[in-house]
Length: 185
Image (tube, rainbow, N blue to C red; front, top):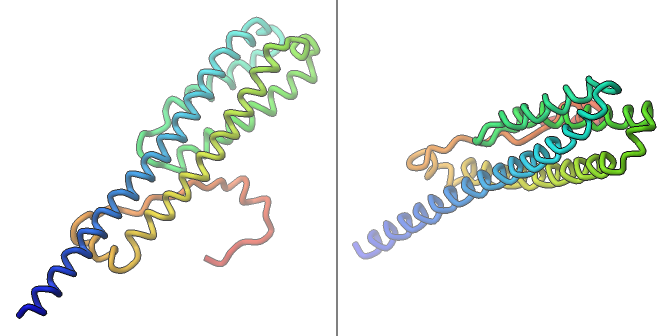
């Protein structure tokens, strides 16, 4: 009888540890996604300032102003819940904007001479690098969380108590298309 009681207590402790581990890892993945959103919002701040500068050059490059406004709007619409697919379009828009800024600098020396616009471009690039690092951390947190809800005995605890779904990690199909090698999973 005492052996049965000890066994029941051990199972209870195991469930308790697994339950708390799943909750902690889910919260870590949510925090990592929030970090991605913070960097995207910081990029919006820089884009707002850049928009004011580019507005002065509106006769030269009206399309660039539209791209900046569109990207800022897309960043504002990112969901609060972790969603790698939603971030993919924002990442693509940022790459297009940076390419557009480079073309504008080459086409219009007046823009290149404006040191302030160059500083904005560097800051946007830095913010984009921060977003890339935050995405890496997010995907790592997603992997740890997904493993914790899919591996035994945590999968049993998740199925009975937590009922958390796997989080989809961020992926970039445009970047993946560059590689010839495709893993078989």
